[in-house]
Length: 339
Image: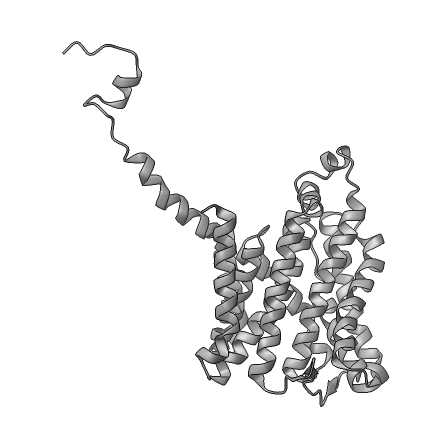
């Protein structure tokens, strides 16, 4: 069985377990945590496309995540549209914002780009606060109700979890198709050497803007799912902390890997749930954990897995015994044994 078929089999197995989770457990807290994982997976996959494959840093993803949430909720609660229209808006509007702001922003590189996306993040949150007639200001929007989707009621936590799990699976499969396409290979070329990519006929600015737009659409989907999971949103839900958390998911999981983005999202969600018990020390312990992973495991969780596989396979080559009683150096030296 080749590597791709094995990966497809494992993906199908994990997807089946994720969709069957409400049957396997009735624990409401576990379902809630699993829902948070699914939303984090979608957000992490989107940022992974931009940072992991295109090599572009972004601190604006919490804001784009929030635009998705607000766009969907405003349409369904204030305009009265159905959930499907709100879902589409939650995906498209962040993509449009990313496209329009990405044209000037993504011409920058390095720390200049990071500062520009940080400014975009702060501007988005300030808009949420100031546009109080639309967004509810600092109070936010409450009284959000879970919808029906194609005639299926999603009001229960388990039913809504199934939607989140399905969205996360589709997002992963879509991300895999993107990185395996010509577009994905172009992004990797830009990340490795932008000058060389330009020499090959790739337009870096065009591809980076497209990657930013796609990444924002993933973030918008995650934000929409989050809004109907929590049933309340305010500007504080989408501050810079979430942008840093999203980046930590990609880095901890393994930069340049969709599997890494998934593992990082799951790991960070579980760790943050565990660290609630530390009270005021939560962020201190969380920061130390991130630093430890980056210093000792720079390849992330995927890098650890690859290292373990390499270690597992190495003895097969080290323990090969020569066919005769000669030492390998004697047998390969071309010197005849005269004993």
